[in-house]
Amino acid sequence: MTVTKNYAFLQKLTDSIINGGCITAGDAKHIISLKSQEEIVMLMAHATVLRNLFKGRQIDLCSVVNAKSGRCTEDCIFCAQSAYHKTDVKTYPLLDAGELVKSAHEAHQCGASRFGLVTSGKGIASTRELNTVSEALEEISQKTDLTPCASLGVLSDQQIKVLCAAGLKRYHHNLETAESFFPEICSTHSYQEREKTVRAAQEAGHEVCSGALFGLGESEDQRIELAFALKELNVDSIPLNFLNPVPGTPLEKYPPLDPLEMLKIIALFRFVLPKKDIRVCGGREVGLRTLQPLMYVAGANGTMVGNYLTTSGRSPEVDLQEIHDLGLLPRMQDGT
Image 1 (cartoon, rainbow, N blue to C red):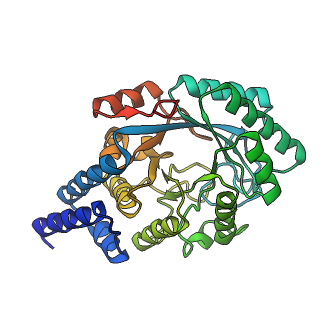
Image 2: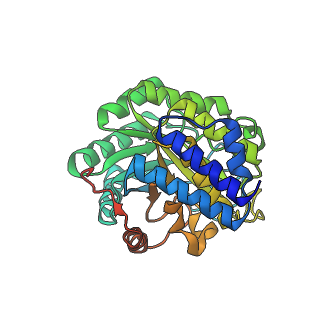
């Protein structure tokens, strides 16, 4: 198909979404098939239209703390914290509530409007851990303007209720990849367990943040499969992460995705999930490099500022400057 015909396709598709329509799997395959620089730039321009219409010009900033690091019992092939891999990741037990709250105040100073407590492992290991996390969530909720979030693995219904009572607003639990590819990246738990946790958090009344990690060897069709799975789950926020290969993991020699390929994935998710928060997180510095500001042009309306779990981010001031340079605004901590 010529560039002119692809432009007409994107224009028609964008108009359809604006008027309440939804894209099909066939439309998504057409999007993912775009290869040339000119076509991907056209795709981003249309994704910008959708982002501006449905999400405005505000960029939602979040930050996380690695609340418990390493010694994870799961064998996810990409993860530096898995006990199955020999990496240089720092290991430590759950930080106390005071340290977690201190990290929240630091995130507030960086401009974040959301703050997440993230722990390694399949789930909360003890009542003591549950109490510590609950204490921190309660203080963050009461003493800051941050929206308290958490990523604590698989939770029981009772644990979810306790965290909800402590002030948890949004629960994060990635699907990581398509159901058809999941057995290739993890054998110690299933895709179905992850999906069940997402649904349990929703049933408890939480907003849910669930996304993926790209560049694991998945196919383009599997990226589409995942996008539509998240659409069916009706999650609130979709974090898009890109592999930053960690020495000592099975994927240590995998090359990062091409920057234009990353931008195409971001745009794809904006088209499939036009009204949802699309947040670009881990791997953007390594993969997008100097093209990082273009993630917003490709349709993202959020990002993570500061450091990640086991890798360093960049200065939040640089992120804020890029947002302003594009004529966008960070979402304020009071939600405005």
